[in-house]
Length: 187
Image (cartoon, rainbow, N blue to C red; front, side, top):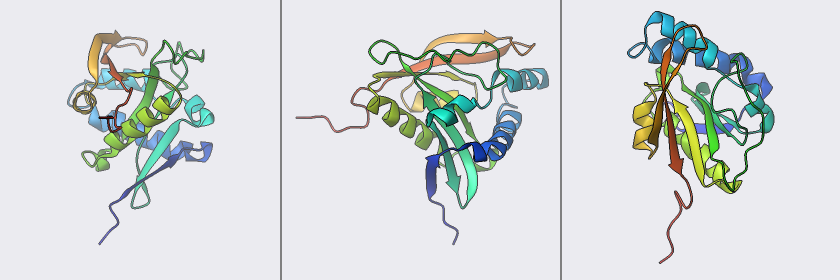
């Protein structure tokens, strides 16, 4: 019987080729029920891997049976979403006392959906952000990701149309409080 346990680790620059292939597959396949071909092409420009997350040590790789099943991370930087090629990135540092941490660049390979990959990444991100003093997290969700984020307690802040890739792509800015989340409450 194959090992079906999800394992996670921090990403390194050596993971870049595998991660970009996974991200391309996720954008291509998982967005099909929600976006047309032009919107998917536009998504490739406004989404993707921001290697600053790898360099900051805040980007995770999830593997199952030695295959890269998913990736995602969190950030203490101002950019809410977008990859290395996305216009408008901002590396300014956030203040945990007033700003929400960012959950960034979450992708699951189409062969590994509905196996807990996304939930694991969210949990890792939330725990790490909480450990750094953040009490809220914020993310920009795709329509494909919205059900997972809602199920994990994220609430809609605002719908967004991003046309920086040439065609408007519908996105959802969402947030969640993480103070004490996942920890037993004192009596």
